[in-house]
Image 1 (cartoon, one colour):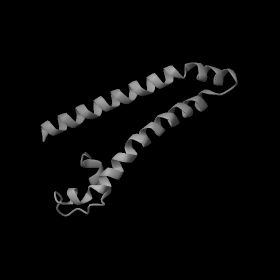
Image 2: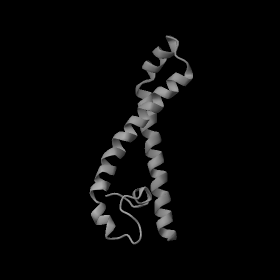
Image 3: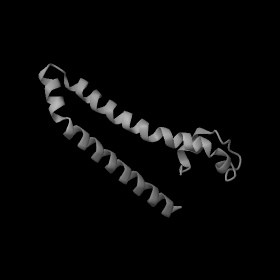
Length: 98
């Protein structure tokens, strides 16, 4: 169990680093656009929400197909479960989706 915890934590850290790198690259590419928006009067909160919304769109695009595939694999997952429904949200959070 300790080994699985270490691997899970490592995967989480690598994913966080990857998302940070993607967002930093995205903001770097849009530096001129952000500067023009600020020059035209956009405040920091509006710019921040623009960047966060762009990141959330990327995350939704990445997570959406995975969850659809997970719902499609519920029969396979149900063979490994005991006492848990296949449509239980906790199952989709804890069971890695292929």
